[in-house]
Image 1: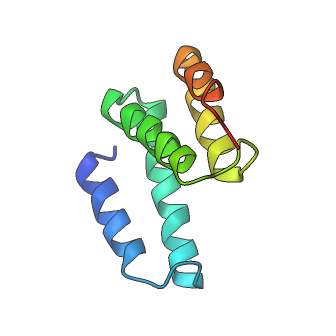
Image 2: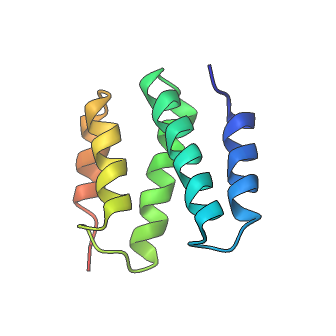
Length: 94
């Protein structure tokens, strides 16, 4: 099972590469996989990380239909966090 240490290590590894490079994209897939497993395993800390990520995306001008936003909302909803997913849907999106 993964831990927050694994998540942070994957973030650091990903961020050591140029954004959108093939290495960065591979690192992002690893990060998303760890996040998905941890949410599915009931990590409340990771659920909060996902919530924070979507709030940050919203503040940076992301649109509701962006793939990252939709993935995170789906991840929450499909793992029993419908109220949190709904909260994110109700943000003031572009």
